[in-house]
Length: 160
Image 1 (cartoon, one colour):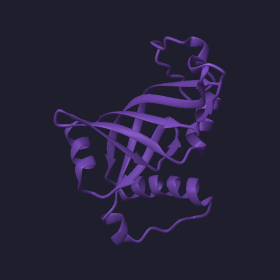
Image 2 (tube, one colour; image 1 turned 45 degrees about the vertical axis):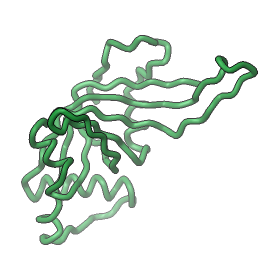
Image 3 (cartoon, helix red, strand yellow; image 1 turned 60 degrees about the horizontal axis):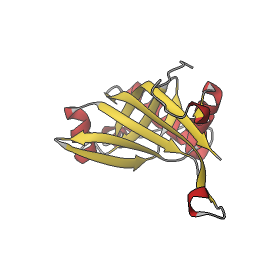
């Protein structure tokens, strides 16, 4: 695993610096949010994803706002967070939140070959349905857009 940290984190004591812990979060959390630029407007999309070899993979319909935005500007920001909980206190300013999260940046690439699409879809299936050799019908592959995000930087943060 590449070590890519954003060095701008203000609260260094909250940084997750273990690449193994970052990978564990990416391997187990079910939802990622990606932020795209649609013209001049930010657009955030929650989606299922898989993490493999310093990249994130997801699938989509071949048309729509998300894919149009990615074609115009493949630069994205992503966020993955664990289930959080409120930490209560006796005073209003003593409250906090217990969480772990990752924020990162990368470049999206639409996968075109059958082999690349099958690889991406197999990663997704293995994450959410555990193991197996998956067969993807040709007509489904043609109607599915698969995207790989090459991670450029990411930072993990935890509290509580």
